[in-house]
Length: 139
Image 1 (cartoon, one colour):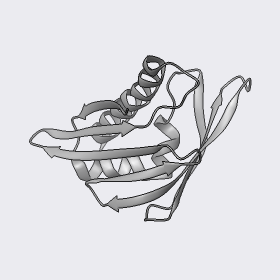
Image 2 (spheres, helix red, strand yellow):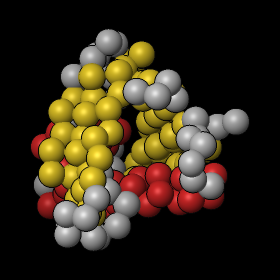
Image 3 (tube, one colour):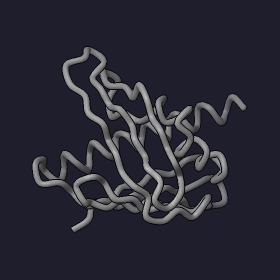
């Protein structure tokens, strides 16, 4: 069973791709709540390449490294990757007339409820949407 989330971003697919995949931008949106942050990210965006992001509570009480290896990469369209524990994620960028629809489908883990996982991943995607729209409006 997969968990599906999505968000519509009022930004071109080219800009969405840049903001979503460039570590310079990832560190600004890749967290689910304001008391967390992403102090570092690396992204070798190619099949077999590694994605890594450090996610931490700002107070230092907890943190973890999120790591995955890309299975497929279709520039401006999407990618799939496999996390260290074997779970897979499929991310799609769908160009629409007024922006980009992002769809993410992922295998859940077994420790947290499906709703908690959905809410956490959706919060990160919502954070991305806010960031992307804010940055694009400045350009």
